[in-house]
Figure: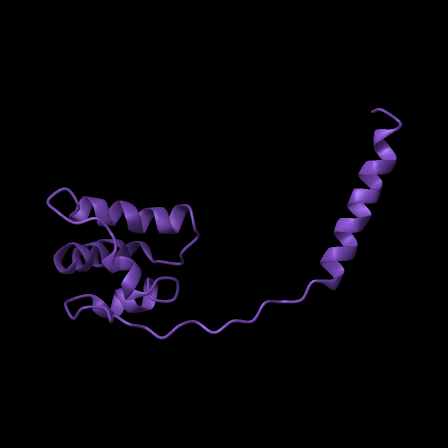
Length: 104
C-alpha cells in the first residue's frame, strides 16, 4: 500500500468512528393511516405479517390486472422473506397470497 495513503485512511476511519459514537437515534412519528386492509379471508394474517412494515396504502399502490394474481403476490411474499427477512411462516405464504390476489 502507498505510504502516503495510509495516514489518510487512518484519519478517515477515526473520523467515522467519532461520528458514529456521537450519532443519536432519529425519532419520528408515523403519519396516521388513511386506508385499512380490506376485509376478507386472511386479513388477520396480512395485518399481522405485512402490516408491521407496510401500510394498506402501500399495498393499494401495487400493480393490478390479470397478470397480477396469486403467482405475483406469492412471489412478493417470498421476496419479503428471502430478501428482507420478513418473519413469515411457510404455512402462511399461500393464505397471504390468496388474500392479496382476491382482495387487491
